[in-house]
Image 1: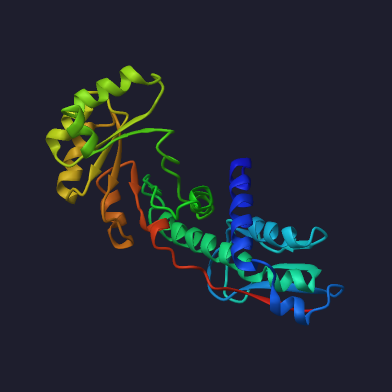
Image 2 (image 1 turned 120 degrees about the vertical axis):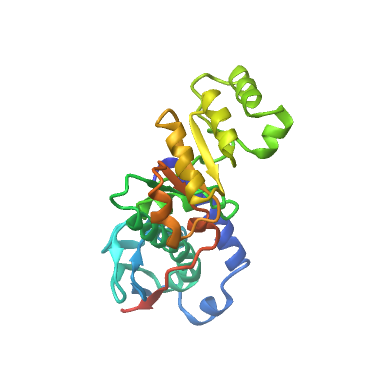
Length: 280
């Protein structure tokens, strides 16, 4: 994880622990003496790709600065049902109080990494990359996108600030694709990447003639997409988008597009089933 991702995790952990613990873990503090230490482990209950181990460690370390953390796998590793992911040792109270928060992060992030790996594997050998989108859980953008990378897929823009994306409503306001690109180039650094959303071959031609760096082929049929790629002929990068699912990936890639963006990687995550067990 890079420093921005770590900082984001720290903020989210503070919020998550605050909402879960509140004024105190009543059950644990009533039943478990503060002086007792125990060993625990996390076990995968399904095949997948792990992501978020460092975040889980950060959760427990907030509760026990002397935590001993011994990961068996690293983020990005493929895991099998029954695998021990990490063993750790700390105060019994911290192990119980932090369990749900740590698992919430780890399960979500691993779920994203797992579906990202499935999509990336499907495109292996095609020369086409699968990209995520901005359809992330609010506040979790950096962690969601980190998890996508751990699964072997790639990140699209992080937010509205790091790349120009001219979509249909922008085009309406500007009065056309060429006008929109011209205005953006006038008002921004010349090095800024410009992507334009297109839905017809005429729009593709206009975007190409106007010097778009990336041309998004939005909700096009396979036949039209193939013709669009032929027209563009490598002069701009191409991205297929719209209602992308696993069953369509190879057919879309066969058109020759450079990228396929898929909101499903992050917008409807199925958490990877992981459990925590006290073992000593």
